[in-house]
Length: 290
Image (tube, rainbow, N blue to C red; front, side, top):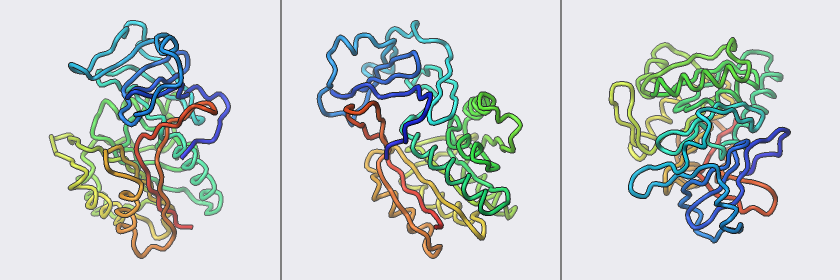
């Protein structure tokens, strides 16, 4: 799924191939691994050599020319501002393949809030640095943001501040997802929409293990139990190898059986200017009420 072009867009995929990708993040250009890019690059090697820095996983995770990276910088993409920083695992604090989902979230929440004339309550699980949280909040929703990492929750709060949302009704929670969902069910809390991007493998606050192949159906069942009487959507995405759009759509359809509505799915894509080959980076499935 491609994002719509946006004004002041500061991210672009510049090229990919030979298991690598070349991306622009504002004034910073990075070369990083991309196992899906089995084709040949379009740009000459000299263009790749101009990257600000590169990262590889050969002989361990390593940045090359990391000293050229700013310790932090701000990127604006899909109408959202993000704080970026190079981590030891090669991540930056953003997954730009989610841009189309952020645009969809903001538009869907905004339209539903205007139609229903009441606050919407959205739950974002495995929420990382908060892109989906911010998109829903910018659409006018009240959001519960949950991640197992206290550091990532703080990073998301920093991003909220960058977007003028520091006073917006967002609950910031650092906890194990299943424990939190079970508590919310006992409290009889209900949400109009649920967003989740579960990891292939993760650990909770108290070393709880999460494995997507074992735990995803239970996660979705718990999410189903928290939906309001008039639910708006469930948006599921994943970066786990083998979890194709059809896989995600099948497991989501089982979770929302009986609710009506419709489910759609697709690949999440890194994209750039016309002519740049889009690069798949995970899959999504989303159920919508109407």
